[in-house]
Amino acid sequence: MTALSNISFTIEAGEIFGIIGHSGAGKSTLIRCLNLLEKPTSGEVILDNIKLTQLNKKELMHERRKIGMIFQHFNLFDSQTIFNNIAFPLRLEKLSKSDIKKRVDELLELVGLTEHANKYPAQLSGGQKQRVGIARALANRPKVLLCDEATSALDPQTTQSILELLRDINQKLGLTIVLITHEMEVIRKICHKVGVIHASQIVEMGPVEEVFLNPQHYVTKEFILDNSHYDELKAHLKTSAMKDANLYQITYSGEDSYHPHLSDIIKSTGVHFSILSGNISYIRDLPYGQLLVALNGSEEAQSNALKEFSAKNIHTLAVNL
Ligand SMILES: Nc1ncnc2c1ncn2[C@@H]1O[C@H](COP(=O)(O)OP(=O)(O)OP(=O)(O)O)[C@@H](O)[C@H]1O
Ligand SMILES: [Mg+2]
Image (tube, rainbow, N blue to C red; front, side, top):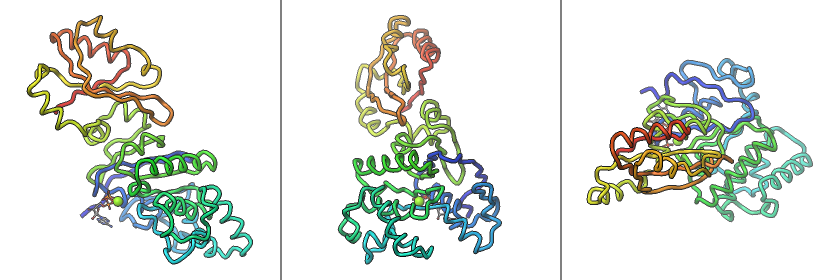
């Protein structure tokens, strides 16, 4: 069986690059190919102009110091203190005791765990454990941090705080971050670019704003549409006056979030809308809104309304429940 095929992409230095896909799509395999924990049968992995795929074992070990990694289940040493967990990669590098102490203290401060240095992993919450994982991954000052579902075991609030930490270190240290996730929320909150992986292939890739506003592949659309309530809606619509309406997901961003475009279009075309659901959130710092509407009216009015949306740079996506 082929786990990945025909994959080619470039990640710019300093970028937060997200890879999203369903379970079994090949995300972990792909991220493990980046540091050659998994050896691809063909192709190249190039980091900072160095072809990792052509290095011998010793050279690879050396280059791998440029790449840190964190995991869904943290992978800490349970019998070691937080201090020792973070010191581990520094001891491998044979740093002096005082240099290790200095660096670990810096890292503890960076991730906000200074008071917990002498505790053991079992005494920390999930979010705190992931902070230890991050501190340990950063110990040798890598250029790239790989995150394999780093927030998938955490509750939404803790996820938010870990994402903020990742964003912070990306900005403060200029660290390049590659993260894989099955949650579009994670991509929306911190990533600059996103690749969608499905059945061993990357099916869509681009700046997060573009992909969110104008998704092309059906898997991307599934991830972006807030479809958690579709089943209830379907049952309800069947019996309602809107059973013949056409459903659209309307997406807009930036300044458009604050303009009364909907009421303008109702006035100028004579269509009727029912708003079935809606929310305004952010793509990083860009305001971004999604509405699910039922569109009613003559065929001509509906077609004119869709044209007007498009002219106003508001994206519409037909939804079949
Ligand atoms: N070295 C390999 N050679 C061939 N197939 C592999 C290899 N490693 C993993 N696979 C298979 O590739 C598929 C993708 O696995 P992978 O763990 O990358 O998925 P994933 O997207 O990370 O899923 P999850 O969200 O469940 O973690 C699986 O069917 C797995 O069994
Ligand atoms: Mg995985």
